[in-house]
Image (cartoon, rainbow, N blue to C red; front, top):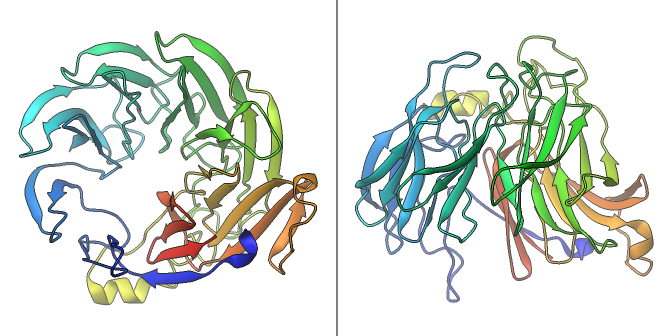
Length: 373
């Protein structure tokens, strides 16, 4: 599968049709980070049908059953400047407000998930998890983190009966040398089922699915610190990918990667190199992504994830599961796991990877790649 990689490069965000690769572009105001405006593009032409409230962080809003769930109202609370203090449910047709909710702690990279039971689930920047009624915004349950001083910019993942969070523990804020924590809760009532401390921070979203070589449902998390911009130039930033049993938290496999030195001034790959071009274009000067994108588990039980060093990792699974696979020069074996690594030249935002029949689309901070399996 991985031996048949092919790429197509585009900037901005295309839609596709059987007759042509690209039917239209909707170029956001900044190549590095989406606009903080809530907007609904017309799928026939790409121009906005409506635009409404503004926030301090764009995040990854989503819609379900006719309701667009988005965060807004910029936060000025420590330990960071940004994020949003309120959650809104809007009519998808015209952007009018249905409900609003104020979480105990602001949200960052807000990414609501819908269990298809009339509710919506999300995480605040400390790792607190919330479940609301999708129609009314009424709180069903919330589980707050042990401290309101921590910070992370990940979110939650869902299985049929559980909610999973990956965040930073205590008062820590995602820096190198500080711990993270993974937690599992019952979707029905928010009761904690298990938790697992991580040696490294957790600053991205988990993924749930079945992995090659394992029968049980798995949870994949990507520990790794934020970039160390200007603070400790050249300090090694550690990272890894962990697969856990989704029901118990027991480790299934560990995929280690070499420490990343943070580039010339502690940035992700592409930020320093692309700085002059962004200045000329008058857009946001750096992308400043987290250590990892959110991982994606495909239908074959393989994991795709991008790292701030510009490398895309395709983790196929235990080497013993692929005895007849033709190896390529980019394939390696780490801790018994077969993987293919491709350098794409820039860091990755969280929601960087999506999949379709026979294809993967991966967005770095400056380029959209489409890979053929």
